[in-house]
Amino acid sequence: MDAADSPRINDLVRLTLAQAREHALILMELDGTILAWLMGAERTFGHTAAEMLGRNFDVLFTPEDQRHDIPRLERETALKHGVGENDRWMVRKDGLKIFVTGVTNRLCDASGNPVGFSKILRDRTDIRGQIDNLRNQSAAFEAESRRKDVLLGTLAHELRTPLGVLSNAAQLIEIAAPREAKLHDATTLIRRQVRYLQTLVEDLLELGRVKAAKVSLQLERVDVRAIVEAALETSSASLRERRQTAEVIVPAIELDVDATRLRQVFVNLISNASKFSPERAHIWIKGTTEGEEAVLRVVDEGHGIPPELQPRVFDLFTQGAHGEPGPRTGLGLGLSLVKEYVELHGGRVQVRSEGPGRGSEFIVRLPMPKV
Image (tube, rainbow, N blue to C red; front, side, top):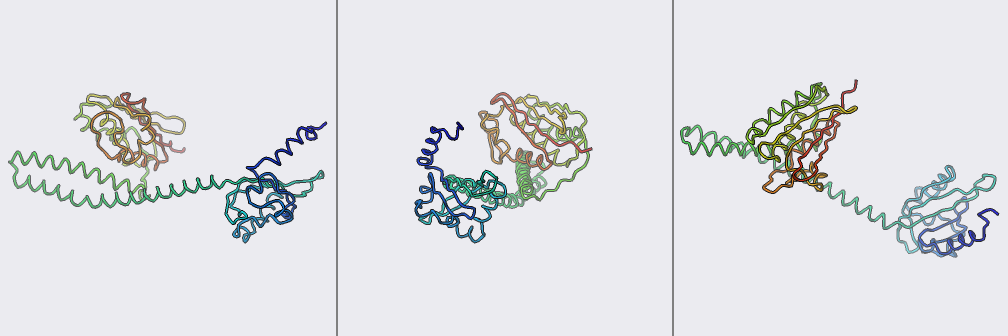
């Protein structure tokens, strides 16, 4: 006896048709006329079987879909391919729109000739509502991010002028009273802090240009070791101040890059390693190739990064990145620019740390030139 003819299976099929409530099962003629209204069809659409038998299924589509002839196109798809997906808004008896998901299956006789359709649907308005809420939240976050970028750009432009005035005023004081030691100390302090603020302003402006896609790379074939050594030279004063040492272990690797911006990537990474490492610490810049990528690593003996912070370490305004006690100032501009510059080159940047007190490793991966 065929399993399909088993009384037990027939009983289970009958019970399924009678008791399954989450899915609607509708059987139709080739023109969409409803022949059977089964399982959760009444619960889903609000219509009883008596109300729907003999009617065309098209009446449950939204007026917009009916105007665009969607019901016929849906049946034609199932007729041609054997199955068609039904993920769309439909209309209940009470006029409420519901979002249903399911399939339309082509049914054929023993000779393979199409004789009708079966439609299995489920009301997933709840899931669609969650999706729409997430989309709305995402759109709101993107709009807020754009407003923040505009605000930061405006702030940076507005700060440029007063910082220039302060720098000029300090210089005038030095010229007017060149032998006043106390004034010299004060103007030196002013000029140093103004330079720091000017660096922040320039980073803000550059980050805004990158995010607005106003930065174009000037690519040239260069040896990446030379770029790393130039970056180390730029950072040497701050390293000496903290009595730290750095070592470059990078072979000759030629890449097509914007040398100025890639140098800034390593200046920022070396500066970050220095800032979050103790005095007399050692920093390594290592390089190699892996397949079609050049891989550069900046490794420090610093305070490390907590696991929960590592996914956000390249985000703007992520502060205290290394989780150690003590003041940790900064806006996260340097690492944000690192990420933006590396991605502009078609590369990616990663961070690894075994946690607080275990140091950090920043990994820059850049595509090798195509032969």
